[in-house]
Image (cartoon, rainbow, N blue to C red):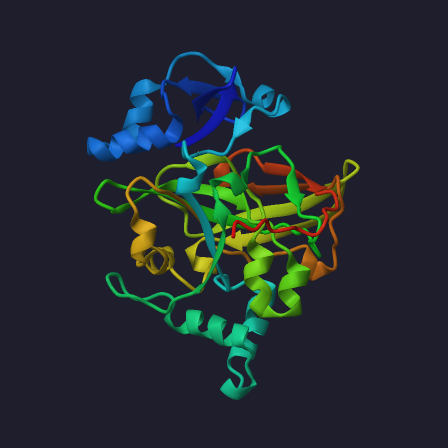
Length: 331
């Protein structure tokens, strides 16, 4: 089952994706977040609630896209209570590059970079048996819910950015129950969007490079995630594709299990605050930056995964130059 959120006359709406072309509205005041809270409270599944509340009306999916009425597939009524985070060095890469990566991690430990040591640790200890805890991954913070851009809306890079590059990823979406238990709502495609020039200058600037907006959706996948997923990431410039590459995700293409990544995020008590929404990106191995592409204002990022329905599309904008920030003093 796949659902979307969209807006009608400033009203948040939920829709069940019937097929590639049609949406069935779902009666859900408060959106997917409110439905999920109700499911937790009454020990129901989200799919059951949606099935009970879908209507017979049909809305053309393309119309919502053309009129830019899509929203992220889940939102918190207070964006400050949505935490956007992610993990890196989690994916093994494509079949063509996997052997090269393994060749590097079998080198003498003294010759490995910090990043390769982290990757090697994930390969060796990132998939523990059920009920056990494996190696912790790289982890980063991106922002709160205000950093999530809706599908079809522009991703804006700050004026000080050195780069503005896509990152095609899976994201897990979670709500903490009243007792702090994290509940997985489902999965969505995402463009994690980072500054790769800043990151590559020195990995200690990774934290800076990740403090950017991102996008999510348009569809929320409810239910079991396939272990193997193949997608396509592309950049369009003036209606022409200037770069396109397939990417792999899902657990069989990762150094960590999703359960291990979830464990190392939610083990921190501050991430189990009741009612909070979490968007957690699971990483990627495919970047246009690695192929020497530098995105320009007006370029459109497009990410597709067949199991997630319609592609996630966002044009690129750059913020106007800003003066040096002046800090006001209350002393």
